Image 1: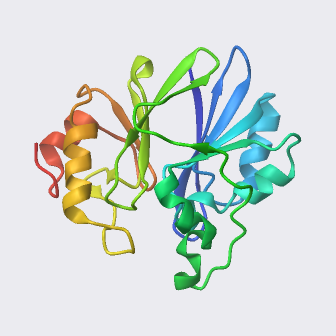
Image 2 (image 1 turned 45 degrees about the vertical axis):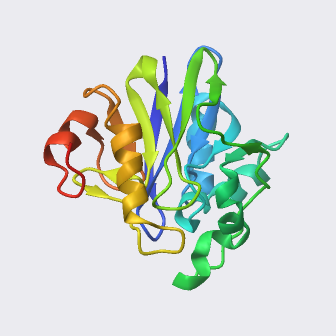
Image 3 (image 1 turned 180 degrees about the vertical axis):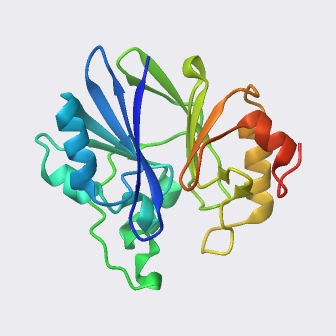
Length: 211
């Protein structure tokens, strides 16, 4: 079982997800978008221990809260990111192009690899490599819970931008078809922006990628 607290934070109204195993009280933050102290307080109020920060990709609005979270934790959390986004991470997530200079927080220590399994208590997350929005974009799929944390790959009725450095529409479309549309229709898609949706809904209604 998972407990999920969602936040919409920062200049791009980016969704961050605080996810915990209620039995062990272990927690991870998926895409600590902004205002890390808000996410941290939510964990502390529930008695959860944040041990990991997992990034679907390294854009500034998905890592902007990492430094504030990490600064308050001892030991430092483990940080996971696909290696193809390390350059973007080192560049502050591209924030300079939008006039933003962010502290990207602690160095990634875990390299996401397609198919790798991550554990949070008794819960298993499967990493799926889904480039197209960025070169190293990944989604995190929890089959047992019918949930996918899909970052900026696909949104409710839309898709991630492909006009930023590292973006490619054909690659993104392929990622959606092969890695999202192959999940059960009832799978909940928790995206980086906007409201949640399901695989089945997007197959039927997404105007950018048809089934």
